[in-house]
Image (cartoon, rainbow over all chains, first blue to last red; front, side, top):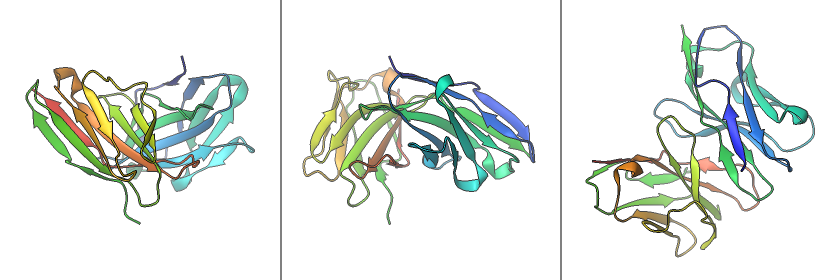
Amino acid sequence: AQSVSQHNHHVILSEAASLELGCNYSYGGTVNLFWYVQYPGQHLQLLLKYFSGDPLVKGIKGFEAEFIKSKFSFNLRKPSVQWSDTAEYFCAVKTSYDKVIFGPGTSLSVIP
Amino acid sequence: EAGVVQSPRYKIIEKKQPVAFWCNPISGHNTLYWYRQNLGQGPELLIRYENEEAVDDSQLPKDRFSAERLKGVDSTLKIQPAELGDSAVYLCASSRTGSTEAFFGQGTRLTVV
């Protein structure tokens, strides 16, 4: 069965630290990949997405993610986090059957 | 543009009672999704509509859950009867047909006591 795993359940960083959140998926076919963010009290919002082409995609608020097909990974990165990045981050995969599968989420806490 | 609107935001009911959630998608979005998000987990798809047709309801527990989207616009998700394990956040999302980006509502937090 298709699944998405995220490496960390909870990450705590100080402001200006670099961030990398891991995401791996299990599906052998063509995929679209997403990172969503949910700020406290708000709805899920799309951070960035990968369809095809350049495996390094840039999203909003300085986030980027790299698709490594051989590793079935789509890790999220940001060189310098801010307190306002405190949120829940979800990796998601859309399969060729139009099914979107979400990972369990990583809670990021940024300490001022 | 207005986002996906869900109501109510919160609902507390006793077990065995019925409950219904309502979703109004973004205007022009033909695809509508209902997800359930348990505490500490990612959203899980319950049902996906293309206009008024349910094209994927494989994860919907059909013994107690039902959904409708009669006019291909807004949608209702119902649970009857509710069980303690149904406590979760129920999310609605919509997208344009063929688009890969879905827009989410704020969800309805259901607590079954």
